[in-house]
Image (cartoon, rainbow, N blue to C red; front, side):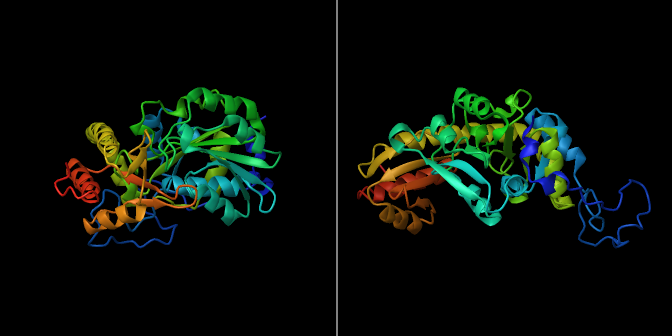
Length: 357
């Protein structure tokens, strides 16, 4: 058995769009493209031609980067598109549901709402570091639970799901649900990627992105890794020519060895700055708690969140304020050393210490 059987029947039978064939070094008169190039075309590939239906060279490069086979990977417009595609493929409107934790990335619920699927959220608590209760997740599932979303490191809390807990979830749920592990921030963590579990667990789906660690958020390039049969269904649903030619080319450049070395250096600096900020903020009286983080951000609980936001805004610093279950919590993305110093001065100003001491 395999999780592809959980997909909607019409999706299982869906065939990919048959676009005009693309062959290099030919006169293409089969796709209604313009026969000339614009004077503003400064890319390796001419923009008067459609991009590849699926960028195969980029697919192989990303598969090599993430250490999986190319037939297990689809390139997407960020992980958000991957989440949307997965919910549309697996969830029947008004029938199926997804299970996730709370608080977590809000787009899981968003795309479930768009599809007309129910969302079941298992609350986590800051008192125990927002740890994921696998038993509670399993108890929330029923025969219509198609997807279980786990964000690790979790946004906005920064914590990881331990590898043994993930394996337990994969084994106990079996082929009754697909377990989707969203690893948008995994490069900032000491834990290795769940991609290494793909060959052993056919119910695992992993999401990765170039937005954070490689600093390519503007390119909107993500990857979904899953069993080949699931990748085939995703391919059938995803729009043709999904990745624009400039995006494909800039991401190919980002995956070159020198660019990857630069990214690794920046990740290391962000981790150092993250720990410096956490240690420094704990000394302020208005800071109730700072949670440890495995991401490029961390969550802090303060006495007066609105006052902090106003003070930071006066210094042209924007923070993310969370309401609901996190009314006094602010998520802080780690910046450059100078930006982080200005943040510390903003905190200090709340206590009348204008020098930030």
